[in-house]
Length: 568
Image: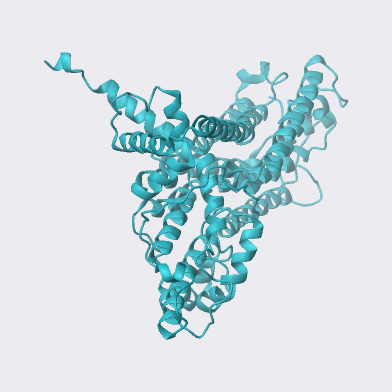
């Protein structure tokens, strides 16, 4: 039998430049360029909602490490006979397990984000643990639980990696296969240099790497797969997770079979044993790099299509004097779609004008005002952006709670007015902490840096007084940076009152008193810019996906429903 890199006792101690070796070297270069371009594209587009919710840094780090191992194997046929005897042992004992561990750590984010988003699908949601209560808990475990999800994941995975590396180093030290001066007697290699090199490429010393791969591929990954079976997202994240998990399953068994089953000796000179692991890495790279790239492009295409349809609708209605009738038609179509029945003229599913109008800001605001729960559930359970709709409905509730005299600034300056403003500031502070603060919000809404700085100037000092200086308990979306991007104002901004989802305030918010003064910049329009940005983001991202899903659901129901003639 041959070694890990296909070396046999009959091999010559020189580089191999056969057509097979050259093919693998060229293939390594071509695929590396492709993967590198994909990684660069993902990094440049990291502000896209599709990638922002993923937290791609763990995934990118894992892919880079796995690709380093993959590339080294592609040159195995060419330089295997002249590589140091323990080179492949170290490559397989370091790059591969660390990359696999980081990759499965990034996969657990999928379950975590899906779990955390479920709360936004409820009409009344609140945090089960206030920050003050969290700070009162002591002990190492309590401190660990207060860390954000990615930090906790990195700690657990880091411990697993340290154990893996320790076992790898320990096996190398106690075996005399790679060094004759120390180790367990009887583990030495014998024979010619090529016979010794062949023996170094296999043996019991590799068990720690094998166990580690089986642990991640056959224990952790299937658990993730099982828990994700009822999750149906619009981001392609579930497809990515399933594809990578399935690709991992046969890798280690096939590597062992190719290494120790004599029948594979015919194949090994052309397809060395670790190529089976590399095949799974290649499939993982397709799902983890190129699938997200395609999702980003699809998102951009959908966004542009939505903007084009809005422009077409505005061009049709501008100057016709039928704005009221147009809005009435839109309302009728929206109500029909939300109730699950077609309108009488069938315009929901067929007419282009209906498609144009239903994607406008007016249609979105109509749903937010009349019946936001279906959109709220879709954004939380399918689009993983439930914080956006919850923020919009919370702001609408807060605005509607303001007396008219407060909104227009005509309220008299007396004790009752100041007390009322303090109470409304307390509610606004809760909205800031729940949805905007990068220190406290579990899913901070993605507003421009300018709007964020302005709101921080108004609320951050009070937030620290009420909730403390500690960072948020968990930040599933932006674990490594606080990246925000500027969102242009909506081209179809309109005014509407909205019926909100009622939110229970955090326990700590109830303790806010008058000892912290209300900033002078605070007024009824404090959230207007952020609200416009999030509305625009929802309009160009979540809203068209929601409309498409509702259309498909309605058409499926109509297909299954027998017509009147058949029923008679």
